[in-house]
Length: 120
Image 1 (tube, rainbow, N blue to C red):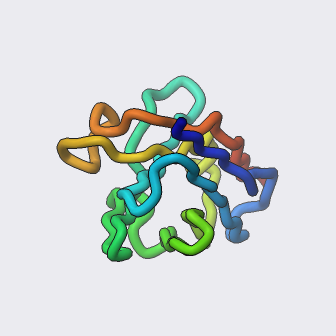
Image 2: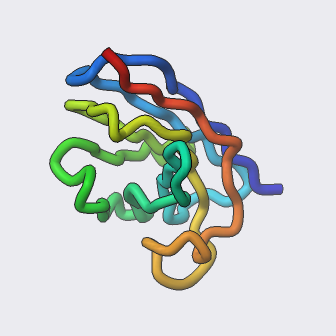
Image 3: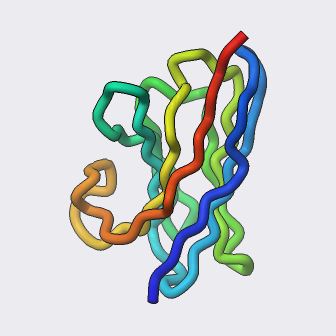
């Protein structure tokens, strides 16, 4: 059974940093994606990391967010720097199944999400 558990969300101020974790069980050595859903908006792609630690990011977070992984721990991390209020959202990690890794439909198992709020 595939399970993903996110952690690390919270309330931070603009300019702060925050690191989210995603512990994956049941499907190791796979591409893991991060997505987010802001209030009143659709879920959107944030970035992904493949087994060889190759990464890809949405333009809105490129240069500020970094995804890394520890394969020994089956855990993927999302390091978020220079946070802005527009980053406020519920963040989800998911495991890639097939297809284009920037597309929500390419992922078949999702975590429960963790809230990140950026506010003065």
